[in-house]
Image: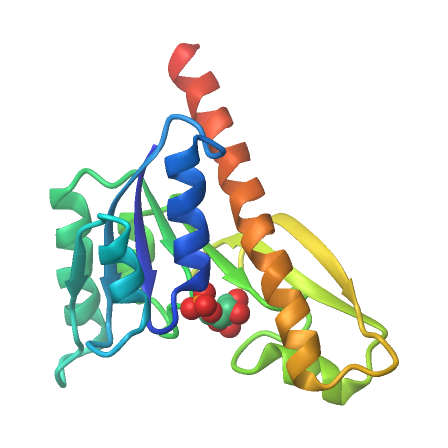
Length: 194
Ligand code: GAR
């Protein structure tokens, strides 16, 4: 499974994926490129340190479709089979979603369909829920939406602040993303062998 990862920021999920691919925890896979829409994304250095090709594709006043077309071209040039969104904070255009139909996955820090959008952990905290969590899902044309692959619940503790809750969710995100990709890699291998 040839993976391309899109990021906008810190890139901790991206780093967890790259490390799990390198260790073989995600089998038969490689991460061919990490693309950021932000030149100052902290994740770019993390990818480079891990020997993964990095690319910055900024929007530069273009339409969403034009920007996404450049990203899609770069992914296709490298033969990417699976696109992983890891803190990629832009909605993808319908054209991009169609070009990679069924081959785009995302991680989101809530139990979707609850709390899509920005600051999902704070949304859940402010809503006073007893349990929140994280979701890995296939991406469709809507924001933080599409068939769920895996979810993990995280309890809100009595003394939690938004920050401590966010931290515990993030730790679960890393393992959940790895588990989801492991499942997809094993399914892909089974399909290729059939
Ligand atoms: C993660 O918590 C991820 O779930 C969230 O952004 C953070 C990125 O952190 N994504 C979304 O909210 C998508 N709607 P990271 O850059 O360290 O992986």
